[in-house]
Image (cartoon, rainbow, N blue to C red; front, side, top):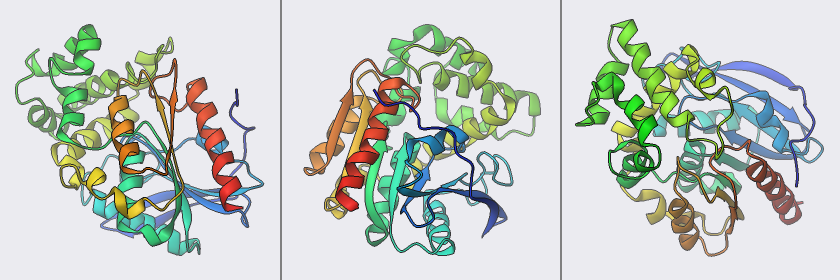
Length: 317
């Protein structure tokens, strides 16, 4: 089984102004003359980290990683101002132009898979191929799977779901709207309580077997605020795309070499998301990973992503 490649230092790092008062953290790793790859992190709101550099052979690939609007090291932190999927497209295109790339591979997991699909469908001329993990299709059923009572994840984790409802006094009625009010309130205590509850709910179901420090990791104030605010913001707005759009427009990217890696026991993004997408992309590779959940850092998922980069190298070199 393949493991993360050795640690690698960035060739350069910078903050790129993209308009609307936002500055994005951007970095490059790997071979400046290699096949370009843009990495789209999950969340929305998580940001990139150094381990995300380690899926790519640094001799083969020129890898561009960046923190999306309001996420990670980008500024201002946790900002919802002009933070939409369409603005993200513009940011990705600006980065592509700034680094002088005509076409690149698009690598994304979870929300990053949503953004990767939507971006590639909007700009198919800019994409060399897709490597996708933990597919999230941004349909109403997908939002319900993650947040609604009596559906999906709430039935698998009923004990954790009660903690998720605690900021709402245990009542799931109108959940997204009420959470949004808390996550955007001027009351800092209520805002942070809601952010931590939201992010912890997701964090507890990311791994098939959660790490021992899961509660501590997912209640970090900075991470919780950006993830909680932005995920709720995107959910309440349907991720700023039409219902079913990613499947409807899959024909626009059917020509691209694509690998889909999805854990069989992914409780954040159900496996049906991946099978539904693969059905619309008959030339795509769908690799279902047994004994794996959602996280890219689970051994089977890591192995699948590194093998996916080998697979696509053989087709593009």
